Image (tube, rainbow, N blue to C red; front, top):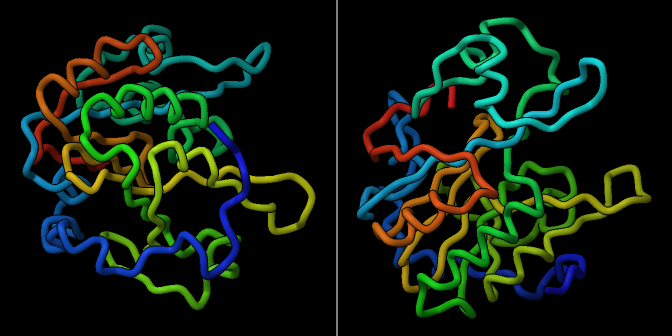
Length: 231
């Protein structure tokens, strides 16, 4: 899988019409955020993938939520918040879970999902327009408003590894995963957001079960009407 930077402005950028098979009213803000405000309520099953936690105690360590919950004697459940898992102890911002899966986990998710679509070479990627490199580089590109205004890209599933931008200050590249991505046959849908500490997936029963069995992920099955408040 190549890790080229995202193509220059004017290439590989999709028109809003590529989202036409996604009924935009299916995804969007609600009075109370639920799974279906991120993932369309049209799938057999839904999954919440918890983002890894990095803690600085005696040393930096990357741990699962379950490990933290055992330390704090918190009870794990499908809608647990990070604050609950941390024992309601205020953690510094750099110790909170990231707003997206890391690159390694994302690429593993691509490998698993590829078996559950007939169109792995034709996917749509929605990236929030507010990321610093995105807002500048793609300022003239079309937007579509899902639950946030997004720039749309279109390409094969493997292209998700290409979302590398130069950091605003220059120097190193910054990997920015899409906030939402789905194949053109709409066989599954993946969504995350900067306000959340989890990624949500909707798909077939077999698809969700396959992800649940993979040790790369810490997951809970959820429903489309479950609240995402604190997730």
